[in-house]
Length: 354
Image (cartoon, rainbow, N blue to C red; front, side, top):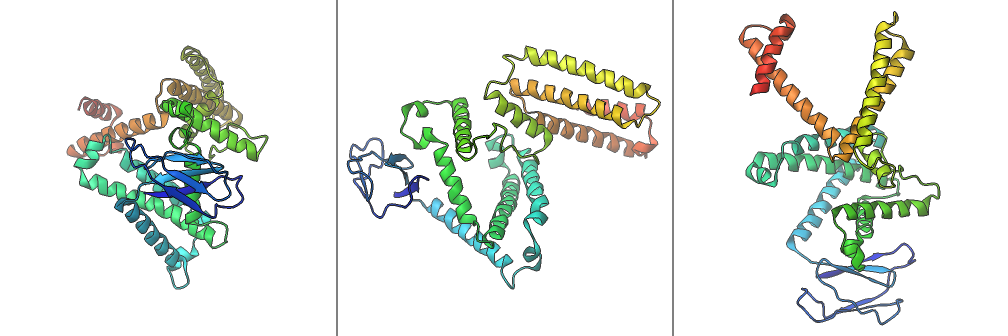
């Protein structure tokens, strides 16, 4: 095993020397490893196990089990980072050299959604194991998404601001800091269940933001570019954690009925208007539609339903059924635009029964 030190922000310099003796390798080992760090008060004796950590002074010490897998991962990341660097270097790929953070922005979104398309096909770990093509697709799409992290890190490294190594180290530091139930010593933290861990994560995150900005909001860090349904769910989650939520689903259900009534009023106003394209009427109807959708998302949140996944599922079913309609029409030598609604609806019902 090797010992890694994560330096706390309050420590100006890393320790100049460290001694680790009698490393315990399993909970059944009674020997107590002793850590001695130059510049840190002596007498700090702790028990360490593989993949565990402790705090010594202002430092977090983590024992990481060395393995061929870890070495292979490090080697592969080094190789691919070097490849991306070469693509951007003089004599590299003209297309990659031409790119900027802004020109690459669409690809971040595109690659993330291509990962989601594969994930939608994986309903269990067993299915992933049983279907090599699916595993291969996931590997390829995750690689494409990693490429975006690498190339944006490479672009930033050319300005001397950050690089892939600093991105990885910052992530590692954050993960350790936000998981005291894993890397800390407090028994209260270790006793947390999954919901408690998530709540603790948000508290730690809020405290981190508060130290940087006294006027920080619980809504800070919520990307405006997220898909609207996903952003709504995250927003509701954040305000719920600080108590801004109905005590049960009855309140939101009443609110849904209220919002539906208000939306119907605006729809009727738009229908009665002689100016069907009246922007003020359309804006009012759209605002009420937004309120209605938000109320549905809040009910979904309280019931632990994911509106984004729900709508994706509906779209998938709709697409499958409409393709069946097209297939049945082709069998009769017709296209949708050449058919009646009654014909298409008959085949639609047929698809629903399949």
